[in-house]
Structure formats: C-alpha cells, structure tokens
Image (cartoon, rainbow, N blue to C red):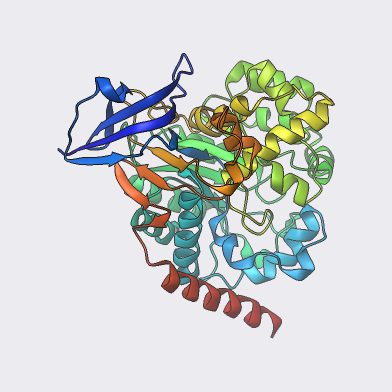
Length: 456
C-alpha cells in the first residue's frame, strides 16, 4: 500500500452530496482509493508521494465519457462524409471501415484513450460494433489497459444488412448466433463487477436499422444473466432514425425500446435527440439513461437533444463525445461547454443550464449512466480518479473569481495532471504510459492504408 498527498489545491471541486468546493485543500490517496479530503492544514504533512500544487490548480473528479467509437480515430474528416447527415455519413464510411484490422483497433484505441486522458477523461465507454477481418474486442481492451483509462467496453453488433432492409452492407454484418456466443465469451473473459473495477463489459447491438428485434431481446437476456453487465444502443438520433422505426416496426424509438425490454436502470441509449415526451417520462420512471453527444449531433445536423426536459423529468444524463469521425474531436470539456450552450439556445433562456450543472453531467451524470457508485466525486472511499488544471494559462486569465465556472465557459484543451485508479497518467501535461510520437506515426500509417485500399 502506498500513499499520495495532493496539497495546496487552489479549489477542490468535490462533487459530493453537498457539492462542496474547498479552498486551500488537499486529498490523501491510499493505493487506488481516496482516504481523506479537507483543508491542507488538516491532512497529514507527509506521504509516500507528495504533489504540491502551489495554490494555483483546480482539482476535480475525472470526466466520464458515456459514448464513443474509438476505431473512428482512423477516419476523421473524410471529405465525402464532411457534409452529409447520419445515414449518408454511414454509407460513405462503411466501405472504409470494412478494412479495419486488429492492429488498427489496437492503435486507434490507444490513441483515442490518450486523447481522452490528456483532455480530462478518466473513465470511458466505447462502442465497437464492426468486426471485419481479424477484429475482436480483445485488442481494444488490451490497448486501453496499457494506456491506463478506466474502461467500459461495449461488445457491439450488426446483424441486419441491406438485403434484409438494414442500412449496413451485408459484408459488415455478423450471424446472430456468433454474436451471442462471442458476447458471452468476452463477458466471461473480461468483465469485472467489483467496486473500483478498471474493466467492465456492455452488450450493445448497434441500432434499430442494423439489428433484429430477436438480437435485441436475446442480448438483453444474456446481459442480465451476469451481474453488472449493462445494455447500450443508439436511439432516436435523427428524424430518419425515427422514420425507420415507424415504418419498420410501427413504433416510435422509445416504444420500440420498451417493447424489447430495453428500458431499465441497467440500460442507456446514445443521442435520443428525437425522444418523445411520453418516452422521456418512461425513461425517468425506469431509470433508463441517456448519453448526450452535442457536438456530433450538431456535426451531422441531427438536432438538439431535449436535455433540459430530460433532467427535469429525472432521466439520468451523461456526456459522450461520440465517434472521432462524427465529432471530430475527443474532448469532454468541449462537450460540456456545448451542452450548456445548446440548452440555452434551445430554451432561449440564458439560465437554462449553469456551468456547474454541465460539470455535474460530465462527472456524476456519467457515473450514474454507467451504473457506478465509485467514481464521479472526490470523497473518502471513492476511486482515486481526479484531474488538476493550472489556472496560470491564457485561456483562464481574468477568471480567478470563479475558476470552477471557467472550466466550462472558457476554452480548456488539456489538463496538467491526471490520476486514474491512483496512478499518475498525466504529469505536467505529458502522458506517462505510452510513447505518443510512435503511436501517432503508427496511426497515420494505418489510416492511410485503410483509405488507400478502399480507393483501389
């Protein structure tokens, strides 16, 4: 057991039940768990490691990303996909993604995890739903473990191709028996339901337009036969998504999810831009969560999710960056800022969402959506996942009267320190776990190969 003391913190944003913000504060960590929180003067003066933040840093819980597609880091800003909506974007990229390999999955997962960590994320859920060539979920899990991110790996799937009325090409769909067999395999190989777990598994059939109702039902049954395995999918992302559900199933997206047993406190859906008012009430009453992805929804012209209405109703809401090909950035502070701005524009009310509420969605909201009671706040007994931002940077100049709001309202691109599971993974702005120049070179090569091979 080792101890780590962070001391002389300018402002400690605890996100605890009282939402305390402490000045001249400190945090004592023992191994991977927070042991004490309080004023620096009230904590022990020494520890195995001491980090003196010199009264110039804000410390807060690590941010939680509830929806991403790491592999898409290889296919950012593809010209033909820059100015089209969701279905056109997917149709453009499916042929490129069919070239994905296990090497590509590993490298893109490492680079995406690095980008997330450097910008303040300490826990992320990723949705890998295509498995061409030699791709398995195993490579992604190993890659993220090596970088040090707390990880919820979603075993996604597509089983309904164009010949059966779905959107993806038949070459990218899998047999449903194979999907379920592999889903069980990865759960038994990697899922850890213990408190402070670094790896958990989710089952995530991709979307109403790419999987069957049978696969949705059977995936839910399989997930619920294991403790702590959650369910995730895309839902009501744009109007075409709603039209597909109405024409194919005769149901709105929310009613479609309900008919398959996909409501409950063990389920969260990505986007929900066009979720109906009755469905919002059902989500709230069942504890069904939503991953709000504001930048991607704007990028693809999908619309503005009714997050204010969801929050007022009691729906659990977290933030997601969505895939690196539909954002095309991977920064949760940016998502939190956009969530605040969109909520205000949608309501035509400058008080519709505060900076602190946006920060709450990015931390505690994400923890709730992922079913975790051990992350999202800084308090004794919680996982030692926290980040530190130096106030002495141009983007925060003139904001010291409210440095907490400044984290959301100003432009924040990177953190100075990050601790995940008590491990220092960012030190003075530098990642400590992987060699970024080598990884960038590898990723560029793999991205070029995917696009070049598809053009042949």
